[in-house]
Image: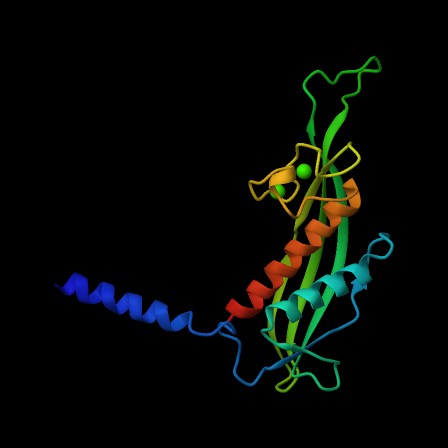
Length: 190
Ligand SMILES: [Ca+2]
Ligand SMILES: [Ca+2]
């Protein structure tokens, strides 16, 4: 009986904690501004892409109102520290005449540092780093490369997220993951 009561208690507490989609965001924070992305890499155009995808995600999830910094109660600062393009797998019979292995699959990884700052109290809400990645092959389109580019268990036609030219699409996938991880962090930090 004690165990049963305990179980019921746990269910009630868990039920309450999922009550709001805002998760545990401090009650006085209702707006967020995204500071201009700092790009410390040589990858061209990636700042705009991160800005667009993270804002889209925030707006779509509708957790906080995205606004300009003058009106915002909190500020998200995103610094792109580095970007790695590295071989993930090699084909089995890949030794060519020159003795080099042929790369069959690549992984593009972005390394990002993020700070979420409470502008009303001038204090940090969190500091975190993220290392999301996407995979791509040597084909023409990631919808037909037989690679699970976002590592979600669905490959090519099974996955709505897998489309487009290899490297650009793998980068989009990495930024999508960044957006998702960031929003999860925002709603679960407190
Ligand atoms: Ca997939
Ligand atoms: Ca694929």
